[in-house]
Image (cartoon, rainbow, N blue to C red):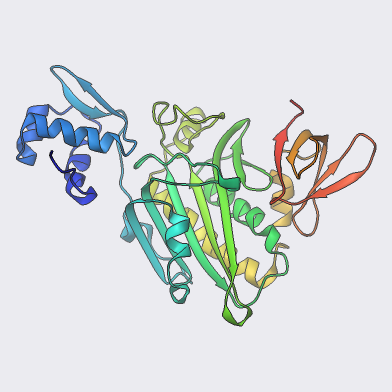
Length: 330
């Protein structure tokens, strides 16, 4: 049985296809120094990464859309970041940084693909190769921030600022961790925290952002979604490259974390209220070990909890770890 090649050995084939043009199987096989049968096996391997590859007799192979791989040198390392890496495929960027030494914080990791990406409440996060941005940022606070529950909200605001600077308007935030354009999900945030020796607090902030994902790559996504490029196309705006977008996001998050550490959520609150997609809208709350709750969203409190006004006029304050929010009763 032929042994599968490791990821690095398959990269020349990925890069050859990256332009999105048709390339004959014969030319690809010749460039790789392998038989056509061996080439077909390599194509199957990179398709398993989530690459959307078309094959046609007489034409050969092509990617359904051009692919730009991430480059750490082009993304840059904004202060106070100490370390930046770009991996090809990992189980989860959050998991890699959870296991990384905190002495290297602040540090960031991008991956071209994840094999076990995860979202909030243990959900899977679809992570095809080279289609989106999968970023984790590890940050160590000297002490436990008093409003840590607001951190996902601050990160969401920072992400919208970066997207606005890239020419993408209309992005809103759905409590506690979603980036949305209308009814479609654009991205999500997952923050994992732990106590450190001496009372310090370490957080790993994961951000997944749909950038260039195709319908085929998202075939098993169970909710409406949108990508940055699709939204820019619809608005008649030029597409932002993945490297430029990665640089803007990382810079915005580094600035936001520095601000949050010094000032808490105060400098983000006005933007959050402006971007809150659920404000004064009917919502349904799931979880918390109780019956579903229908009511009207009334913003957030000082600790980042969602305020829901129920039909009897009571206001309940709900925390992100306990419940899920649905827009509009279903």
